[in-house]
Amino acid sequence: MNIKVVKLKDISRIIINEPETYNSLSFKNLSDLIKIFKKLDDDRKTKVIILEGAGKGFSAGHNLKEVRNLKSKKKYQRLFNLCSKLMLRIVEGKKPVIAKVHGAAYAAGCQLVASCDLAYSTKEALFATPGVNIGLFCSTPMVAVSRKVNRKPMMKMLLTGEPIRANYAKEIGLINDYFPKSKLNKEVFKIAKKIASKSNLTIKIGKQTFYKQLEMPLRKAYAHTSKMMTINMMAMDAKEGISAFIEKRKPVWKNK
Image (cartoon, rainbow, N blue to C red; front, top):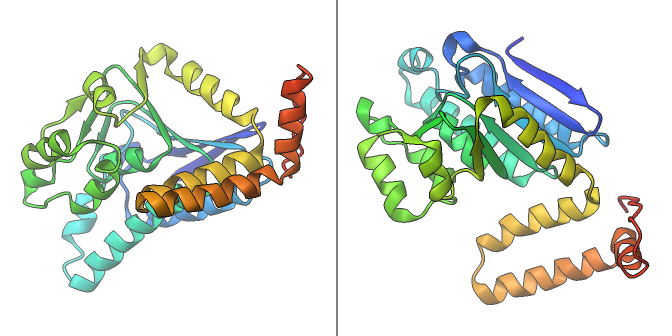
C-alpha cells in the first residue's frame, strides 16, 4: 500500500509509503492522499493529522519518469490541477495538519510541507524548489512556499534551485522547528497532543478563518474575523472555556 494511515487515539498519521520513488507525488499517490485527507476530515475521532514519508526522506515531489511519459498538454494540466487540489484540501480542511520531515522535501514535496499548518524536521532535512535545474520553474510549489516565506529568500530558492538546511528553513519561516532525528517523533507528538486537547470546534473555526482572512484587505479581514469570533462565542465550548478559566478548573469540551 502506497499510503498508510495509522490511528493513535485522536491523532492520525498519514505515511507516504513509496521509498523506491522517494515518496513521489504521482497521479495515484495524489489521488489517494486527497481521498484520505477527506476521510480523516470527516472522521470525528481524528483531531490532528501528522503527514510523513517512509524510507530515506519526506518526498522528492512529482515522479519525473511519469511526468516524462505524459507528453500531452491535457495530461500535464491534469497532474498539476490534481496536485493543487491536494494542497487546497489540506489548507481548507477542518483538522490541523503537521508535516514531520526527514531527508529531503523537494519541489512538490516542499510545497506539501508549506501547505501543512505546522512543520517540524530533523536537523539534517533539506528543502528545495529545484525546478530550474531541469528547465521547469517551480511555479505551483511557489504558491504554497511563498505564503510562508518572504520574497527575497523565496526567490533565491526558486532562481538557484539550491537546497536549504533545516536551521535556515526555520529562520525564513518554512518550518516551525527542527530536532535530532531521535527526538523528532516525540516532539511532533507532543505538539499534536497539545492541539488535540483543545476544542475541536474552536480549532476548526480558527483554522478556516486564519487562511480566509489572509487573502483579504485589512478592513474586510477585521469584518470577517469579528463575525467568526461572534459565531465562536455563541458555541458551548467558548462558554465552557471562559467558565473553566474563571473557576480555575480544566475545561470539559463538548465540541459544540
